[in-house]
Length: 177
Image 1 (cartoon, rainbow, N blue to C red):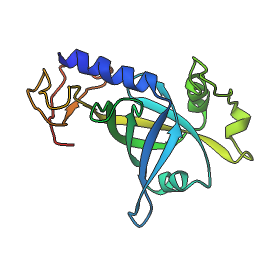
Image 2: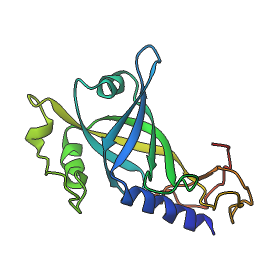
Image 3: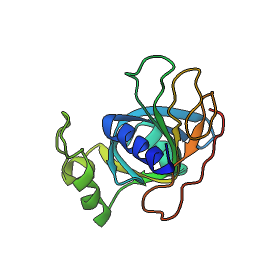
């Protein structure tokens, strides 16, 4: 397994799953998590639609910093597959809105209804949001009780995945989960 294999593993998890868990914090710093249907756009952008009155939407107006997890809840226990990311997010507007609506919802359909500019601008109660990833990790794939082939660790750990837009080698970060 190589760094490129980890990046491909992360892309496969993102492509196969429809929801991410979005972590935000309110003005008082109190954490909040929300599952949102999302559409990826490349390796570093994630789009979703939410109500302007949702807690996470209100939080983003004050604090754009987010954490995200995309995970496969269909795998057997102790066979976890997950992508972790941090970055900044906010409401999409102006010319960026048309670009975002080309990505959202996912082009493969998967049951989502199309969204128009009128659906996500005033006076509609919904907006399109985008997270731009600054750092991403993947739960290193391994069999339970066995070491991962890349790091030799027989415990859950994350490996840093540098998004494709950032040229250069992938730096490993086997921090404990």
